[in-house]
Length: 61
Image 1 (tube, helix red, strand yellow):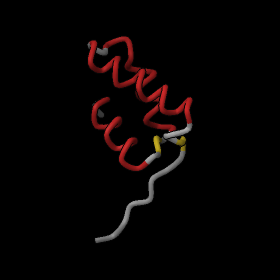
Image 2 (cartoon, rainbow, N blue to C red):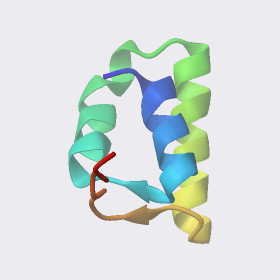
Image 3 (cartoon, helix red, strand yellow):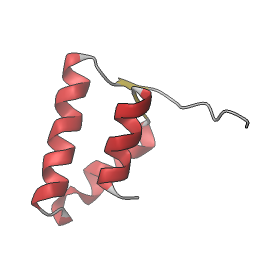
């Protein structure tokens, strides 16, 4: 996983999964400045209710 991908997917869907949050917290000690900024922004979006913790349903094409 990459923090930027998690950020974009979460903003696009309005959902972040518990697994993604767990991955971010377990890997945050190795983040560079940009990744830290994405993680902080995700936290702010969660705090303000823009992003919800849940699951994403995969649509069939």
